[in-house]
Structures are given as C-alpha cells and as structure tokens.
Length: 395
Image (cartoon, rainbow, N blue to C red):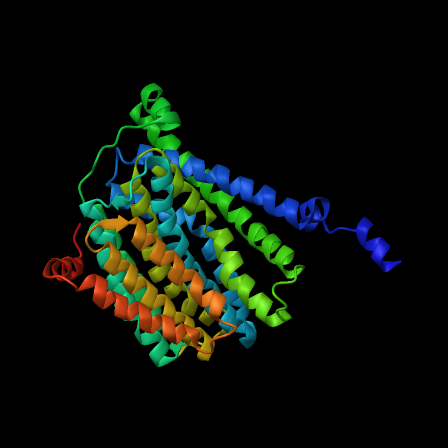
C-alpha cells in the first residue's frame, strides 16, 4: 500500500524528478547546462572587444565552474554539522581538480587531433600568467597534506593568490580574434552600448541557468549511480566514488563544452586558456572557500586550525598537487602534444583502476608525478628556463 501510494504523492519541489525519473532529470538539467555553455562562449568572444582576453577567461571560468562550487559548498556545509562529510568535501574538490586536467586538458588535444590531424596544441605566450599563478598555488598546496588540516589562513592565502592573478590579468594586452556565428551576427547588427548589454545579459542568464541546474544534474547522476552495481562496491565506497568522480564530472561539463566549442572554431589557445584559468580558480578560490564555509557551518573560527584531514583526504590532496605540478611542467614550453595528453589521461585513470588492489596507490602515483616533473620540466636548459620563467607571474 505504501509503495503504491508513493507513486501518487510527489512533493512539489521534486515534481520533475518524480515525473521524469533520475535519467530524465539528469538529461533535462544537462541540456540546460549545454545551452548555457553556448551562451557563455558567445559572450566571451564579444567581451574581448572591451577587456583583455585573460580577464574574459577568468570571468568565463568563474561562471562555468559555478556547478562545482555549488556542489562542493553544499557538501562542506554538511561537513560542518557532520564529521563524516569531511572526506567527501575534499573528495569532491580533489576529484574536480584532477578531472579538469586529466580529462579536460587532454580532451582539447584529442578534439584538435581528430578535427585537423595536428598532434601539437600551441598555447599563447600570455598563458604563462595563468600557469605562473597555478604554479604558485600548487607550491603552497603541498603543505596541506603534510599539515593535516584546512584552515582560514589557507583561505586568506588562496584568495590572495587569486586576487593578485585577477589584477595582473587586467593589465594584459587586448587581443582581437575574428568573430564567428552568433557572436559575429550580434557584432555586425548591434551598437557598442547594445553589445555591452547583450554580454551582460547572456552572462547573467547563463550564470543563473548553470546555478539552478547544477545540483539537480549532479544529484540525479549520483542517485542513478547509487542504484547501479558498481563492481560489487559497498555503499560507502560507492558514495565516495560518485562524489569524487561522477558529481565533479557532471559539474565540470559546462567548461568542457565551452572549451570544445572554442577548439571547433579553431581558437585552440583560447580553449586551453579557459581550462587553465578554470584550474587556477578551482585550485585557489574553491580550495580557499572550503575552510570558510566549514567555519560558518561549524561555528569554529580558528585562524590556524580548521577542518581536520584524515588519511584518505591527505593522500588525495597530495596526488592532486602532484598532478598539477606535472601538468604545469608539460605546458611550461607552451606546447601540448598528443603524447603528453595521453600521459595525463592515463595517469589520471590508473589510480582509479588500481585503488582496490594497491593500498596507498595515491602515494605511488604522487611519487611518479614528481619524477616526471623532473624529467619533463628540467631535462634541458631551455625547459628549466621555461619552468622558472613562470614564477615571474607575467603573460
């Protein structure tokens, strides 16, 4: 009787989920996110007439990564009330950062290769700015797994790094690109003041659409995954996997779609710049927001001692920092080859596949990443100069 009644009673706030099911709900939310990604790509192209490209990419990255912020801040707030959520908050954040590099960055080279046959993606020299700040944040992040907690002091440092990055981006030179598709149509038919209004309108609407669709998209995928038998995993292991892999993959989808659109329009440097900028803001603002939200939820406002990290989150943070350092070494010469993209993808996937069979697999792959940093980033005098040049924090 109760089971039958449940089909006829559906809370109004869950109407779509009840009517469409988890799969349909995920598809509808995902379609909204894809549509918003198209609007963002047009707004970004139009905005480069008025602001430096580096700053335009920062704004694009902030809007397109909103789903990840929404999901991780929700989990972090719960962590302030329930200690069992602490590991999940770090899992979601580290998963999102590793997916962005392992799948996102690599994907651009693969799309370019299948589109044109090119095996090398060239980055614009101005992207040394993003890489330099990413290197600075990564160096600082190495102390987190050693110290064993995320504190408000970390929030201050990471937000300061991001703020300095924004200020430097505003000083970079404006660069014009030929407009295509809807962006070109708008530019030809609308005056300067009107274009500013359209850019703001597209950005705000896309921001709202992504924000309201993010949690339903991630939750629907997690629910659907929870109903599946994932390699015989127990409920806790499956939940951790879904939070660290499935939810971030869903929430990262807007920026992936925007980047692919840029590649298909032969703006590969802009595509790469968008994802590198996303990595910078996720590795600064997202990490920095966790201790702040945790303090607001728990009521514990200790500047130096915040959210404690157990063994698993510490291993995940170390692996994420190591991957970030290797990715920076790969791009330090502003060339991203097909073989380097394959290496990033394989090194991202392998720990997932070996986690059940190899205890402490994160430590092994962290060590491998650091060895590869030395091999790739310091093998020649020129590569050493390229790597060191990033610390100048200039485009």
